[in-house]
Image (tube, rainbow, N blue to C red; front, side):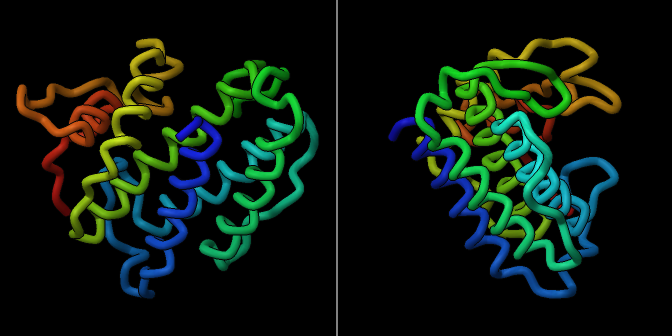
Length: 187
């Protein structure tokens, strides 16, 4: 799959996951320090709105409402539309919180965000969190290029510092460790 297809497939996978949430799930802790499932789903919806605005270099077209699943779905329809615009991958876009980058960098960051947060949500719910190997390998390749700077990794940054993964770690475990999660995290 190409990057645009991978990104949309990750979104679709999360839409399926979000459809399984029950009211009691929203207060569960997640591997994201200090975040509940509600916080994490809100983040996913907020970031979809921000990615859409950054892709178009314009004001947001969507808002996040109390119906977080619907907000995530609606914002990602807009993101997908923006990402598929003619010439977008090579055009300048705004990576939320990081400045101007080519559109392909926006798609890549959106993809990584969706893949790793599907792992977070599944872990929070006590479910199998293994992501498709194709997703994990592609996301790891992208995330391996993220700089190890305080703006990217550490307190208040997008990711925690990398943690060690076992030598026999799966592609998913290597990805989440790279992004600062403990692969065997349990609620």
